[in-house]
Length: 366
Image 1 (cartoon, rainbow, N blue to C red):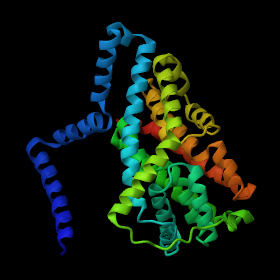
Image 2: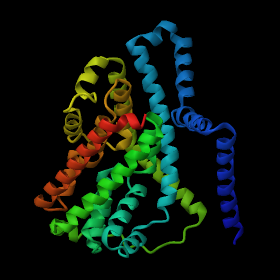
Image 3: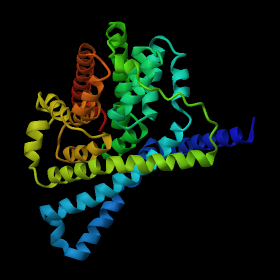
């Protein structure tokens, strides 16, 4: 055993021993308190909200924080800082992981898997690749040209904008990590099942010529040094930040408006769990919009605080990220109308099932 493996093994064993000790000494409630602290103070950054509130009060007075515009300003500053900090940290980490998967290596890995295993791996691969559907489509085109099975490529295309580490952490900071985990699991299931259906029906071969002639990056697999990987991660973080910051600012602005201006009763009547049409409404509203999952996070947070159903909120987020109108226009250049219609139908049905399922069983996750 190498020294590195020994250190990793020892660290994992140490973590297991610590968690076991906490459970034995204090019981499972203590472990729950630890996770609650991590959710609220580390990922949720509640301390930052309190600090910003105190700052505004010290400048503008206590009454300012009780007004709708004061509360909106506090929400805007807090949410923007929180999301940007978490976003940059997570993108840096994910990009470092991505540095081990250049296109050529990815193609070789995907080509080795057959059957449902291929769909599963394609969906899992989507969790460590681009953050929005528009940036996933060029990779999808490259995989198609490389002759990778349609089921695998569509499982990748569905999961890529929906599921990743950043989405998991940010959702956990808003709801809780049980909801975030279930969202990730069902997002992956949707990707696997969607890819499986598209392939088994034979519709996955309805690809336009442009999709078969796209330039696939045949770069050789490079053995990058740690320094090169860190530089790559920093560049990816900077590039992604510049691309998504407008959507984050707009999303936080909308979230602040919803949180402090729109009456709670109105949100609950329209998007509450008791409204049988809430999930369908949220899905329909999300499709024409364009944003990645980071832009939808502040809107989701505001809706959640106003009493909208968890499944309704997640359906909105999934429809925005997976079925936005600009993405579908771009995808139409690659696949034929019949396949596009099937793709949209499969994803919409999956989103509706997930949304209603979360609303019906959300009491188990609170």
